[in-house]
Length: 357
Image (cartoon, rainbow, N blue to C red; front, side, top):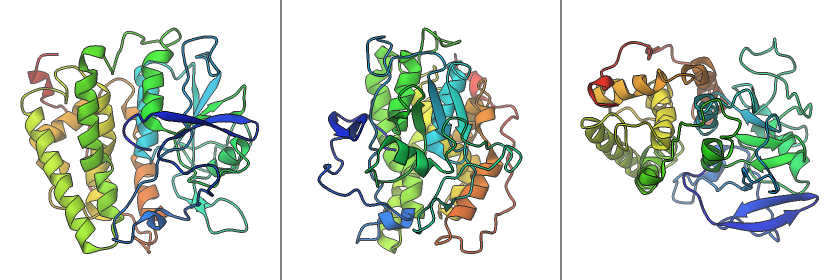
C-alpha cells in the first residue's frame, strides 16, 4: 500500500506467478506476519509501512498473462480502508462496476485463524450479518488472509486490502492500490462505461506523480505515522509534516479547483480518501487535532466537491470507517467506544465551481 509505482522484480511461488517490489525481502527470507499495525513500528517509535508484495499488472494486450476481460476480475475491499476505497472510487468513476465485481469485508478486525493471534479482515457469514459486507462469493473464504493463502502457500506477510483477484487463475493479481488505479484508468477502457475519463493524462503525469509523492508522505501515510507513533519525537515530526502539507494543499486550492489544475485527476482521489476520514477519525483516534478539515475553507469545500462526483458518495460508508478504526486498534482505543460526531454532511453546496472546469 505504498504511494508510487516501483520497479518490479519477478519471482515464483508455488503454482503462482507473482511480482514482488524490489524493496521486499527475498524468497530465501521469511516474510514476518504482523499481528497488528503496532508491530510495524521501528525501534525509534516511528511507524514504518511495509511495501506491497503482489505486483502483477492487468493489460489491454489480449496475449498478456492478465488480459483485461469483462467479468474476469474481482475487487476485494473494505469501505473502512482508504487504500481500498480509492480503488472502489475508480471502479465507480470509470464505470467498471459491471465489468469488475467487488465485495467488502466486515469493518472490525477479528481473528483470522485458530492457532495464532493474527487479527484482520473477515467476511460475514451471510449478507444479513453486516450491512454493506458480503460473504466471499468466489472461494468461500472466511478472511482476506485465506485468499492470500490460496494464492501462495508460503506467503506470511500482511493480509491487506485491496485485493484484485483473477477468477480464471484463482490468484491475486495485485494488492498495491496505486497499481490498481493505473489499471482501472487505462487498461479496461474497451469495457468501461466511461472510457473517456482519464485521471492520469499524459501532459499532467509528471505533476501528478510529484503531488502524489508529497501528499502520500505528509498526509495519506502521515496520519498513520501520527496515530501509530509510540514515542513523542516521531509523533511530533509526523504531525508537524502533516499540517505543513495540509497548509500547502489549502494554498494550492485557493488558486485552482483541483490539485493539478482545474481538472480532477488521480491526485485528487488519493487525497480525498484521507480527507473524508480526517474529522471523523484521525482528529481523535490518530491525535491529528491541531486543526480540522472543516476549518480549512478550500480543503473543506474541495472535499465536498470530490464527494459529489458521480458514484463517489457510494464508496464512503462512514459507519464502516468509524467502527473499523475505533474498534480494531485496541492498543489505541482499548474501550472500543466510538465518538458520536461530527457527522458532517458532504452533500451540501460547495464553492469550487468558482473556478473554470
